[in-house]
Length: 370
Image (cartoon, rainbow, N blue to C red):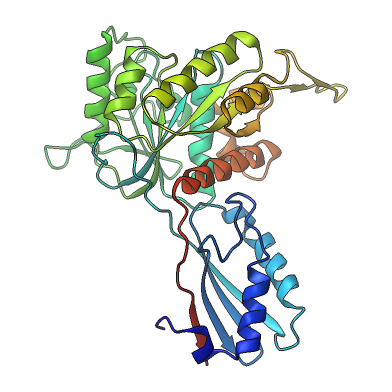
């Protein structure tokens, strides 16, 4: 089919009614209606059957059924339409990163997961975020940039992996749970320390990024080292990061460091996609009461102060720790569970926030009458 003006192919009244209804359907993450956001790509009228072609710019596979039902119910108001068929696809755009760093071959977007201090669950969040993006339909990879404490090999259950080169120029990444992964931990033993100064460590990681034979990826999630020192600053300047997710816990000492991280990203012109408040609360396994062992509201207050979204608040839950220690993170260990649903929500919000940096508008809708 080729793009055609609406009036040439559809009855004018019907086409207007259909587009009016579609323009009233808001995407909950892009904050635009389906037509404005360029999600509606084709309309095909076959008798009384309306065929919709939708293409989302961010992964949201788990929401497809709900969205199709909503559209069907809305369009059922039209007498001329008795049936609605909907085909949904994913087309993640490349968001050009600020700065002079060149794009990594095969990688559309790089998302850095950072924290102002260690011990807030940054790596666990990064791994489950990456797996959630993949579960929602995207092609995803992970780079472990935590040079002094690489944990991705253990968390993904591939600690015995050793990189090899098939072309003598690049290294093949590990494949774990359907994702490509690379880590300095693949090249040193578990008890071997990497005693490198900042410039050496940053240089090694940039080399690791650029000399890995990444498959075609919609997102490469980088688990950044904790803190806001020389390594973090150098990486932020030399790696084409499209957006950053900052992980914190609710207490003041953690949010104070998270704010330093946000300030660092602002200085190097990397958009902060949002904040994840980890260990936000604990649900008692005996009585079900909700407690806040590390205080409450720190993540929300920080988000409001810096005008960025709070992407989610995750519980202090032993199952999350047990899952990553076993090499089967929560999103793959319990794909239908409540914790996985929370990680998927964070993934959708993060990816949509990235799209909002450059929302496609004015895409022509393909319309056909058979």
